[in-house]
Image 1 (tube, rainbow, N blue to C red):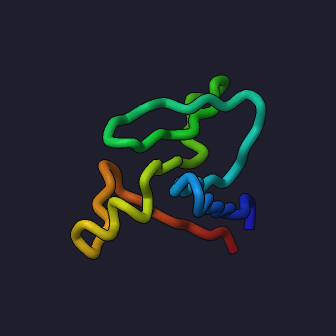
Image 2 (image 1 turned 60 degrees about the vertical axis):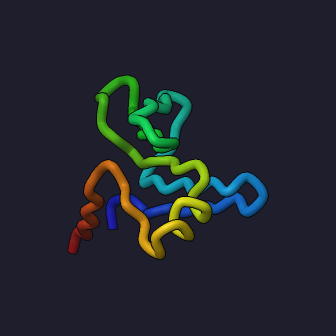
Image 3 (image 1 turned 90 degrees about the vertical axis):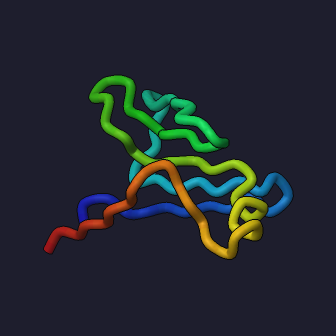
Length: 76
């Protein structure tokens, strides 16, 4: 696999962070509704995302609606 998927959840802060690659050349772009993209400043490639109030937002409806689609791919 080219990149590993890293997932971190901060229980106290209720923050979910998911990324494939993290570096000092990345910045967070606010896309609204407590969701941020992790973007490589050199390539503008999206490396992951952060969701604030993750657990709280999924409790409201029992599902988690995000303002983007997630697709996972693996290399063989």
